[in-house]
Image (cartoon, rainbow, N blue to C red; front, side, top):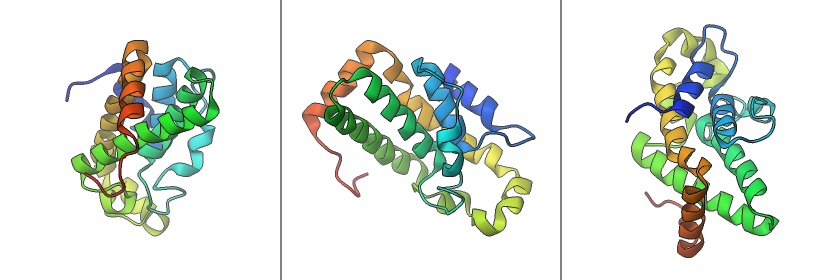
Length: 171
């Protein structure tokens, strides 16, 4: 895949020597900035989502951070709260199906091969996160970056509204 500005921004936030932004935070900020959302640089909502939610190894932070950004975008663009929730869920469900097909799993522990609670230092020292996790963040961003464009957003909303929910376990 070719590089994109939001994916480059996520990499810039994520791949640093001082580890200031984890996977969820980098995804959230890059998409919020790309979508033009207020307080776009605020990553605080995603702080505890890194490492599969508080290093627990669950759903990849790239997905959970992106889900926060998609929810904010839906909330700003769709006045009806219930409809905004349906659209945000469906868009994130599609992301999850595509992510699992591309990366083989949704879970941080499986994706990284590390238990972040006990092995976080080893994970950082290994350095493979700079490639593996960055690729997962970037593919997540690329999957959703088109939503910033109003016509792409409208097409995505129409598509998910007509097709219904993505079934669990499909991929």
